[in-house]
Amino acid sequence: MSWISDTVRLSNRAGLNGSIEPLSNNLMLRVLGSPRGNYDQECRPVTNGRIRNLIVTEDVGPFRVTGLKPVVEKLRAALADVKQKEPECYNALGSAGMLCTRYVRGSKTSISNHSWGCAIDFTLEGKLDTRGDDKAQKGLIRMHPIFNSHDFFWGAAFKTEDAMHFEISRQQMLKWNEEGVFGDPVALHEEARLVALGDRGPQVEWIQERLNLVLGLDVEEDGIFGAATRASVIQFQRHAGIRPDGVATNDTMEALRRASPQ
Image (cartoon, rainbow, N blue to C red; front, side, top):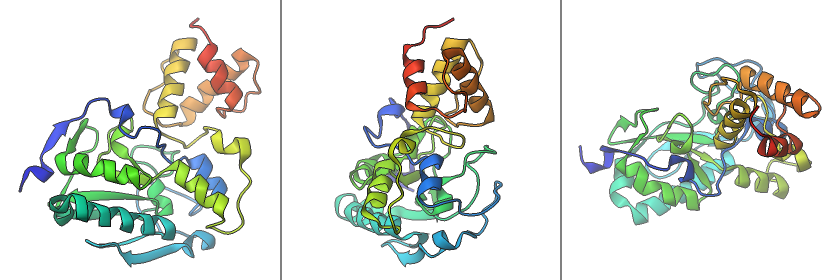
């Protein structure tokens, strides 16, 4: 083993991806639909025929992957860049999987973005980075700016650190939809900016923090928009005179920003 798989503690994790945003369940369900009818913590096959027709198994350089075709193409380009700029890391790379239709680990509401074949978990020197310890393998740290430049979001920024994980960005998915990569573009407008049940990421964590501050609640600030977070959003919407649908609309987000603690 070498320095590549050694780990160091990360600082300012929330800022690691700059303006690059993670995918949301709300967006993926609207653009592509649900990969299957039910989920648990096990990898299950995709049963949605439309999504299944977009899944490919191809060589991306150091290994073969199964995933959503345009994401696989972006991954191949990113890895070619890693090979040129970080050859030691490239030669140590392995994959722990891309397509895996299941819930996010520990959740019963948030569908993993692996379910659409839009995320990949890397190994370095045959070792998986430990999830949730706020550390990352040095090789992943060296690679992450390259992946950011190819429109991938690094999972080290999630509330529960997941440094092995990279997923295509929300911005890239919106662009593909607008370009008709998946067929006729889906009209999204306001819906693309909503945060709803099943979504996760820094934006959800901010909502949870504001709900706790404004309403004096004890919502778990885990960055996952689960049933308890939805119930708390409904409570806040009633308090603020907003339609209580449990969806963090633009009006709800603005009201959360302006609200004072009780």
